[in-house]
Image (tube, rainbow over all chains, first blue to last red; front, side, top):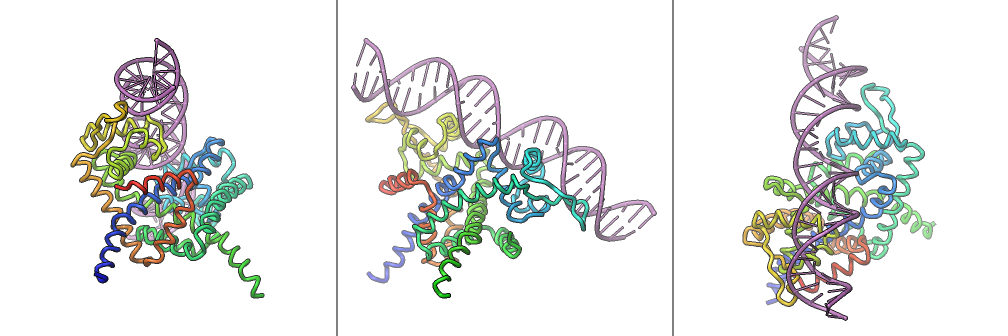
Length: 165
Length: 165
DNA sequence: GTTTTATGTCAGCCATGTTGACCAATTATA
DNA sequence: TATAATTGGTCAACATGGCTGACATAAAAC
């Protein structure tokens, strides 16, 4: 009897635990993006703007093509967002020095302020979750999330973990 | 010196660990939904259909209003999705027995097959992540995700954990 | 018998993704 | 040096999936 238990546990994990994971991903992502969405909405911007602001803030001087790879959208989609961000003075672009075709992107003071506000809001949520879950849980959380992404995405994450903000 | 270390660690967690969490959420959610999106696209459906199918499969006989609460969208948005799902015979509705105003939703055989396919694809991803991260990581993953959601969402998750599939 | 609830529907708007085509400036290469 | 490739921008059109507002019907509740 006792040696059947692991199988029972494995099955339990595959059924119930699996659905729990799927559902937690759905709900957590929804709530995690909810507050920033509200803040942005009041400024006539959306999640797409948030992503651009976040990753420009993460890597100041990032080129358009690098940002495209991270966001994984078309340049036409990004263009619309970047135009709005520059129009409203959250972002500026400078011509690259070594390669003058590139447009290197930077947040303005205004952009930095907004990025800080948005990241701070999400940071408080994470801080709460981390505090409630305990320090040990955090590593597990990151390990699993990391395992959920595609291999190509993992390489990407690693590559800009090397040159952080 | 030794008693300063916790502060150092806390700061490290607040800056780098925080951004890592934010980024992992973004990338993991994107890749996690990517495969189902592809499958659905070939059938002229999208993520909205997936969510409906998933939660109807999770709770067969769920009413429209209950589904609305879970998905947190307007009835007009859901209506469009449900109409398509019924049109294409993935979902059927039955008039409620105790309350004849309700439309209780069920997956058809075809709907169950699609749901299984989609959940299986995501399940394999989870299985890989769980395997790579180790059993202990899974609990941490779930604890943190749970901590990330709003209190109201948490109540919601608990309430339908009581009456699972 | 009136009111509330559960659901559906029509019409239109917005954000954000897509494809395809084409262009200019700049860099790299044959 | 002439040509090709890269970086980035733009225009047009389209799809998805949110939203609001208005209105309708059947059933339940009071």
